[in-house]
Length: 404
Ligand code: PMP
Image 1 (cartoon, rainbow, N blue to C red):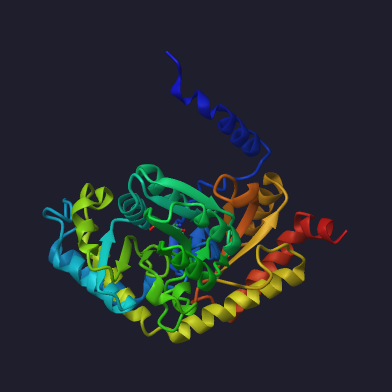
Image 2: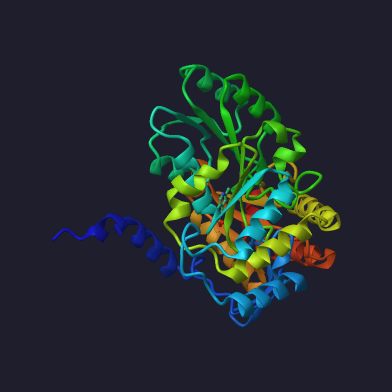
């Protein structure tokens, strides 16, 4: 018998070598208690959270929690069925109505996760004979949507309008084309030049899908995302998003004004062949989405936090993923896995949790410590975060090695 696990031997050995060097496993951390959107107890210690996607801090909003509890009491713990059979409750309709109001669109379809939204929409829209043109740094769920479908896949260089134009120009004029972009790219926290990219896509007769997972709640006048801020809402055909970030729960969605959009409910396999979200989840999502429509002050505070952290880290001497703060994600670029894990662990021991990211999730084989801010981080917490970075950078010798 060939052991089917033997293909993972190199990865298992690499991980073991890292653990043997005395560092803690960055991928098996447990939140023992969650105190607020910005603090948890980890290994018995109060820890500031700077590595969640809780951008707008909605997870502990009292109205959101009350809506979830009420739905749990009134509708039970789960639907035990697909949206197309017994799994559409009043709450699923209500969250789709909340999305239509939030985005100002005619249609909204809710999936069980954002991953499944991309998997379903991408694989169903583009079929055999069609082309998907996507940014090389696209999220795994977009790539997996491509692999689930039968369209031809064309990649263009990350955020390059010129390369997008060139590759679209090589495709048959009459073929169906779907250009897929992300508002915010989550590894480095950079944003897409959507105005230029959407113009190029339209010039070549392509439909456009924008994933606003990391832009919702935070960009644009109504918090719809980077596409709103870029002024291209009337030219974007589909917006995909998630409830697992600014909305503060779990679920995914796609909104559109396309008149035939509702047919997806019949043909999109990751929508049809899975159970619908629990009533408590859709109730929390609907309440949160409606509150995010009036969250201008929170948005302003999140931007202030992001800019302060970016400046502070740059002044300390860290290499960052972007020149300025382009989103609520600030990525620190590190030279190798060992340095990254040591710094990550030093931060944790000083009471700060950030995300560690490594290939293959990262572009160009990079090792990153990713910081993502929350609108609920106070000014004092941002001060404390910067002090912890200064201490950890000194304790590990990393900052002095960069200064040398
Ligand atoms: N798209 C992007 C750009 C993402 O970053 C993510 C999750 N990190 C998703 C989609 C999937 O979202 P979910 O967590 O709801 O599955």
